[in-house]
Length: 491
Image (cartoon, rainbow, N blue to C red; front, side):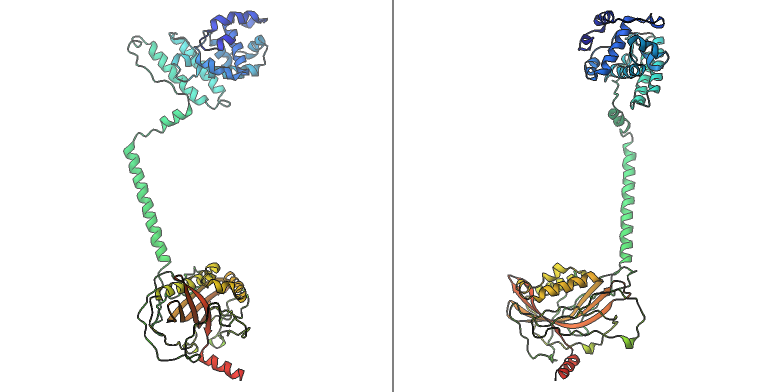
């Protein structure tokens, strides 16, 4: 039996010896069973127990045993119990062994149509039809446990047609070579997916591409309609200076909030001098590096509040108060949260001092101011604090408290915007300058219907280190009326 499994061996030489070695009491129903068929059944059982021998069996030629009984047993047309009793094997084991044996022996890659049907070349048409019928019955029964049963069914039908066409008179001489059968699913799938109408497929792809481009253009148009460009406001009406992009009005939370495009370019028109001096100081003084003007902010946590109708007489602005006037402090334009203020009178703002004409550092200072406003509007705390000089960040202890205050403000507000206007630059050498400006801040609390509006003036002291400008001092400028009232209270 092992000799049959070796490549190049023949089943006829080993089958009689194997049958003679078998001590089997044949029942009356299968006494006519040939010895070669018994040997083939025994070989199927051994192959089922040792599947690694299938490689040599598939390389060998088709055995000369009669496959009629094997196909009858596999198709269920005879009683499998009688054959199983001859081999002293359970019927279920014999059925599984027959299924495995037929698949491994008959459906060999590049097999001829005769081998697929289990016939020797030159068999008559009756045997071809009978074997094809039995194999189709067998494959129909094994479809549930054999995933390749459908593919094998197609192979059997093609083999039947080819063998019958070959057996026709005169067909043997004029027979054309048939392509080898490919039982693998990968080859069948590739043949089914092979393009047949290349031009039509290219046209379909072109139509799909045009549809995609049209959808993209439509979405872009809808986006531009939804987020329309907001009108700009400049500080030209107040005083000539840097024309800063105006902040868009903030809407209620149900409507998308359009924040200002602060990253756009800054126009630098020619600056003109004004004769109106500042009442607080007569000259501009640039402090030393690391000094901060003493001023702090009284700030309370942001809390959601219902949107109630407020009359014009009830609107007020919470003033900024000095917490520690004798100690060095730090201040940035964040007022305490109060009732929403739709408009503040321009008389409450201080009159900015006249400064000299812009220098070559004006563009760098303008970029720093743009980053200042942009970081505040986006709530970017690391970027906002990085605008200060390293000696300022590492020096006063108030800087850590200020950082915590801004962290609470950015986290507790839904949206912010900061507009800078009336910007004036007073150079103090090639590496220092003082910047005077007005600011307009809008803060929308969580749960509020409208944003609160705050206005004021700032004095920023800046220093350039290796071409990079950073803030080294900051002071809020008080209005003339507020300064006079504060002086009267102190007296």
